[in-house]
Length: 511
Image 1 (spheres, one colour):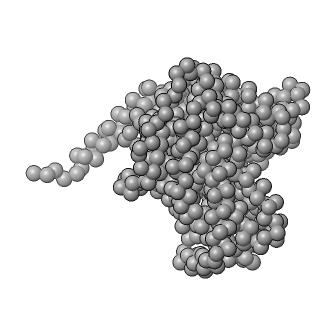
Image 2: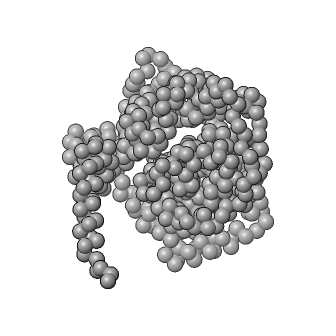
């Protein structure tokens, strides 16, 4: 542990020069700006910057890419709070409570809380990774197809409790997301499914067009369908986070940081999964459940801490195992190879210092988003003063560009329009789109893991239930679903009440 911190200290000293600081701040600022534009992703940002930094020294180029990675995911919280449109997929969990606070005249407070959560989440991840890199890499390696199946299924099961008051509607939207994720060529044998002979569907429904359509275009239609002009909030609250308020939710920060790091360690599980799982955990343990979706500080803090803590988690298996944990980390790994650094198990032996150089880069990115996050709050809050007749066409244009920019396919624009129109009508019937996006995100992982597990076990389903981690995930998933059965819920309450009464009776009574 202390040896790792020593290596990190040496890495920090190596970046204490004007050139590295300018590159780090510039990369973070670029990422924040890209993150604020709906539909533009961290993957796209890193890919574009890779071509622009090809001639720079290795450490300087990787520093810019990592800072832009962190900055993009943080910047996406701005549009989530101010416009109810997540800048990246990882910020979708911040929409409900962040935007609700903005509509209540607390936009500055919401952004301050999001900045605090992003800073503490990334910092927590950096400390964990610098101290326990070998252990965390080993944990990631222990997960197989069976465990990933239950992880994805658990995420969909939690979709019923994430937003809204009707879990059935949440599960239905989660199941719809799972179905949409199956469209296109399946992952093992490239066989077309649900394409109906249409070649364009062979590539599936991309996440970015679905996300932009669900939250962006649907929001444009919802706003234009409202005959009453939305009242602009009075921007009178302080943009600086209150230390007492942040310290009050230290349990949420710690729990979300742990969840974010652990989800980051699992290849194929993106930053959005860390945000949603942290949000669901906060909702399950809070005493203010009625505030979730209506302006909960606890929920916003959990979402932003969870998604940002997953970034360092994604980088470690990428370096130590050569297995990228998410799309942005995959592009980042490709950039490392271009610059002559080969990620993989041998890096722990041949280039151990480079791992801590990357951790130091992430630390610099953490400080950068704190500086820019507080400095650029007031200019970004002016977005709320723009009239909807001016803002909505701009948002629609950004949604169209964002949907097209990922793969440069005109079909992605059509997908965005269709999904956005469907989301508009579903939202008017009380169905939330967050479970749909979660199901879409986890659909590919669930499908591939199930089929790989069946191939490995020769069609035997027993390993899905007999492996220790699988047993834990299966028990929790089934328990969460059964909690919404009235008879089972009453039984659980009766048992927990009896245990609590028995425990109180064992405590010494005061005279």
